[in-house]
Image 1 (cartoon, rainbow, N blue to C red):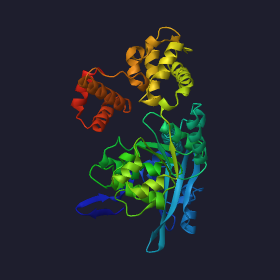
Image 2: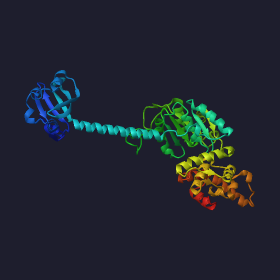
Image 3: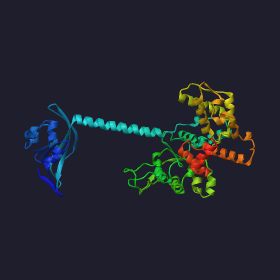
Image 4: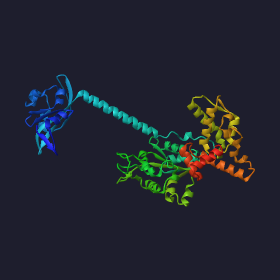
Length: 461
């Protein structure tokens, strides 16, 4: 066996073969065994002195390596059982200058193959489990039966939404925060042909602008400093053949609005750092609590994108305009929440129901749900009374949010403070109850976060 030398590094060919973790046997073009390695001996039990320099068929009459030498065909996974030892063999001819000069067999013990196969199967199952978990996390939970209410306006919107579900066109859902825009989006997805495909939601206002593009479109390897080495799948690709729900679409930067318009027009995306575009079949459902037409007039939203999104436009009425739905909503929400908290069936008193019906609900159904969750935590009995409701509903303060019960202030200062309190209350009700939600509320009020906390403390909010 020759000694290989390159770049100052030299090593004997025997050492190379012995370092290989598979059994190796080499024959020349006459079928004479020229080399076996230590692993071959371990797997087959054949020692070097018993076989090297001898015709292979003389020592191993059933060996197929000589056939490989003659017909020049590669053989893979040949099962052998000799002297009680089981193993699998791969065989291939050795070419030099276009001529066959020998052949090599590579063998691995059967148990090793079984162990490797078991490991691969376990890895496949793990991948399938992870894939199912990812797919499950992007499945719509709600359907049209989840939309509760007798209000005529709600019924009309639901009827249009059912029609929209059967068509592949974009949908724009408008309405105040907490009215159930995502519920409608999920119902539309579940009601269409792509119901079994991913429903991928993203809040355009919750992700920093400099990260939003990579989240939507993904990126290639090395697209920017800090990028994952294997690149990243974007949400458009993740929602391929399904639905991408763009919540708070009014917060989408103008630079990304043009890219979204191209997706709607051409059905293609381009990852960051990619040279080629990729076709996607992703349905867009967008939602906003802002007046997009007003944003268009101010130059903050592209007019062409606005009309592209408005194939179907649904406006969800606020809860204060559908007071007749509050009893049914309250009972349905109580039933679902009490099941989740394992507190058994809960009834609601007439007095508590009257408070709920007459409150203005600036936070809409979301605020109603939060109020009922609070009440469940306060209850020590199976009936929800007025005293269990949040303080602003359980006391006489509740009527301050009701326009019909408005009491004129006694002075200009008191009126201004009450107006400030009411404005902050309404904005907070429309924002999530965490730090990012408070930041968003401060931004809407055009004040600093510290000022917001000071005013919340002042008004006991």
